[in-house]
Length: 132
Image (cartoon, rainbow, N blue to C red):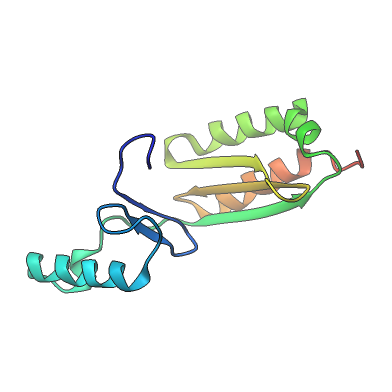
């Protein structure tokens, strides 16, 4: 947020940060700002906050011996490229190592839940799990 000068940010965990008002997440402040926006718009929450339609998403974690080696494996690189091609413009993939555990996190989202499940499973199958 700071690097790009944004004043609004959030996480899936629910933290909402509005740097115009505070430097940390504050649920009460976020709720008051949301109510203020609803009043200004003259709309109920169901209309005021319907900014996008969620799509099917799947996240799976894979325990590995060496996360760096697993991420660099050619089988993983090829599986990610194949998954990106299958999803095309109708989805996205994120594969990353955990910062705190020997895990590879594989997440995909897209219009077709069966395809999302398939590409995640194919990437997981390609991840080497041997000990470091």
